[in-house]
Image 1 (spheres, helix red, strand yellow):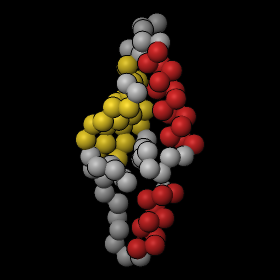
Image 2 (cartoon, helix red, strand yellow; image 1 turned 135 degrees about the vertical axis):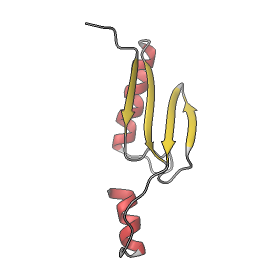
Image 3 (cartoon, one colour; image 1 turned 90 degrees about the vertical axis):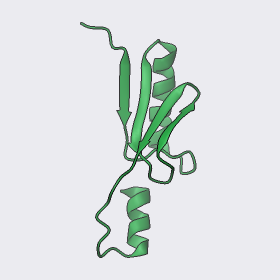
Image 4 (tube, helix red, strand yellow; image 1 turned 180 degrees about the vertical axis):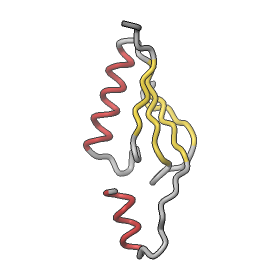
Amino acid sequence: MPKLTTVAHVMRRFSFQKWGGTESVVFNLARALERRGVKNRICCTDMLSTPGVETHESVEVHRFRYLFPWIGLSKAAREQLILKG
């Protein structure tokens, strides 16, 4: 079996300001794998953040632009979609 050298964790959003259970699990998993020599990258939308790359405790977070079909949704419905999906 080939040795795994890079893991990409793909998430809908990853925000330090709106931290939740999923963020905790993925971030702690990434740090644990990093300690074992496995390169990690969290890939997500720039929802509640800005696009680009940032590093926290050796874990890279890559944020990409996103698009939701907002047509006909109220502001409250949009905010709910951002937070809960």
